[in-house]
Amino acid sequence: MCLAIPAELISINGADAQVSLGGVRKTVSLALVDDVAVGDYVLIHVGYALNKISPEEAQKTLELFGQAGMLEGGATEEDMLGGEAL
Amino acid sequence: MKYVDEFRDQRQARAIAAAIAREAKGERHYRVMEFCGGHTHAIFRYGVQGLMPGNVEFVHGPGCPVCVLPVGRLDEAMQMVERHDVILCTYGDMMRVPGGKRRSLMQVKADGADIRMVYSTQDALKVARENPERQVVFFAIGFETTTPPTAVAMKQAQAEGLRNFSVFCNHVLTPPALGAILNAETPIDVDAFLGPSHVSTVIGSSAYEPFAEKYRKPIVIAGFEPLDVMQSTLMVIRLLNEGRLNLVENEYTRAVTREGNAKAQALVHEVFEPRDSFEWRGLGLIPESALQIRAGFSGFDAERRFPVQAQPVTEAKGCACPEILRGQKKPLDCKLFGTVCTPENPMGSCMVSSEGACAAYWSYGRHCHDQSLRAAR
Image 1: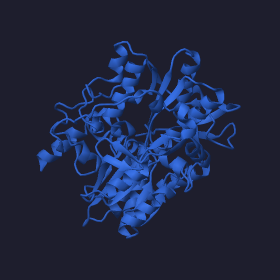
Image 2 (image 1 turned 45 degrees about the horizontal axis):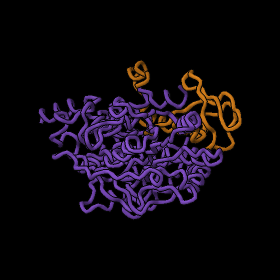
Image 3 (image 1 turned 90 degrees about the horizontal axis):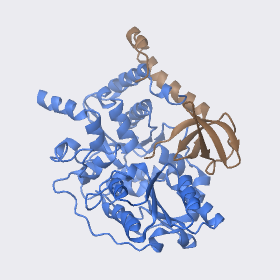
């Protein structure tokens, strides 16, 4: 129920915006967010942009994931080959 | 998709799993309650439990709004359609949930009632604009994530003078539910929590700080992607190992701040106020755990406009949902699970939505795995 999907803002038209959801265009409401611009990624929930996604913070989290692997001494070759989406 | 695929990467998952196996101390057991149905769903769908060492256990929490909505409220929504002849707009999640007489909105619709499945509150407003001669009720359910869109629609209806639109408000609040679980008569046997992701984008991670402080159980705000869940679990294990029990940490920093979304909070506050008490299916009455519509918006309050009164509903005998929602039992401990109670014919609240613990167990074959484990013992 609380699921929200990241989507890129393609165009803004007043209180509404067009987003690209995995290639599909959809109109969403911007009534709940301030300071968004075309090119920003937002979380979409029941037709509303809920929040802007911070690219810097996303990068930091991905680096944290990477650190877990480095402590282990790097992923194995087998892991590298199997490095696909779960 | 950006911000999705990289948080589902298999190689990273193995690396985090290895870190968890390394850091989880062999001499102790870690019981971690994931609060949200979204987490439960991710844990089963991506096999996250299977990547954990044997002493790290997920306990499924009550964070599924469809699951915890009392059957009586669904019956009242049906009464609005059947007695007051309104058009009922609802999110798809509610369509298949059986009411008191075992009838779902889907069946009521098939019998001729005007029930429309909508994706957004904007769609419900559109139905009202297109049907000026009919009354349109939006069946509002959901946690803090889903409440702001309802508030926006009500403000819009007021501004437009849309007199044939109203809201049947069933919005509930997560912190009081967390408090109810922690404060239960039978103390809850979990060490830490994975905190809500999208609820927290709205209310902020600070909302959970009093609970971690008071009950000394750390809470890590966790995203819904599998790597988010795993990384958060690693963070929880570190907090427990280091004895830093009164802390709230945030793994989902790309979307959650300590303060949350102030604009959304202000809109919700303008339209809604706390209810004295609200019943949660499986958890019972919890004080100040839900919202009602403020007097200033009473013209848009379906409960005031269309009087309804549901009969008390007795839950199926033997259903273990109340214990499951409190983390005291697992779906397999329920004798109804998978026998009379299945997603096609759900008897209890944890089976009615795909985010419920029982439905997730059933859908992703977890029950087979657990049964084989039991047989092996």
